[in-house]
Amino acid sequence: MKPRVYVETTIVSYLTAWVSRDLVMAANQETTRQWWTERKEHFELYVSQAVIEEATGGDKEAAQRRLEIIEEISILSITDEVKALAKLLVAQVPLAQRAQVDALHIAASAVHGMDYLLTWNCSHIANATLRPKIESICRANGYEPPVICTPQELMETDHGIS
Image 1 (cartoon, rainbow, N blue to C red):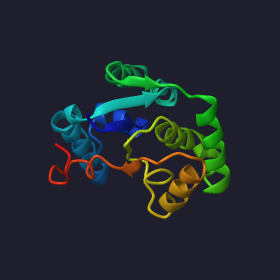
Image 2: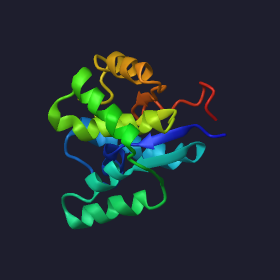
Image 3: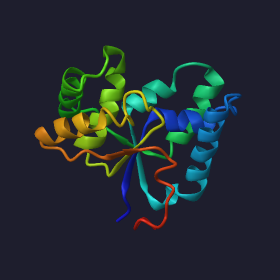
Image 4: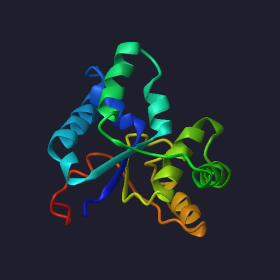
């Protein structure tokens, strides 16, 4: 059985966006494209309705490119359990109110038993100072949290992932 990966919106955005002039962002975009080309087939990919809603925003052509990528990915439902866990994450981590959708990504991946949450959102999701609290809240509510990581962290092939 392949490991299950929740693909957060920043991944789809970095994958489809024009190359940034910002060198760090351009490098992250290239890493995302490399992961997508070389590694994605080693995983079962999932998104949620929250990813779809975020992906539809902004420029219409860019949104269309994002949605084309999402079409090939399985969709997880935003259940009452997901909403309840997201609400706890916002309140107890605490995550900023503007990060409610980020809490939905974390909650959806935990409730649906994802092995990984793949993201470039290092402010509210892949944040080393928030991660222990996120994991604690998930576990306290009966869910094993996913490993929250960037594509760069999930590129390695010598850690048991084939």
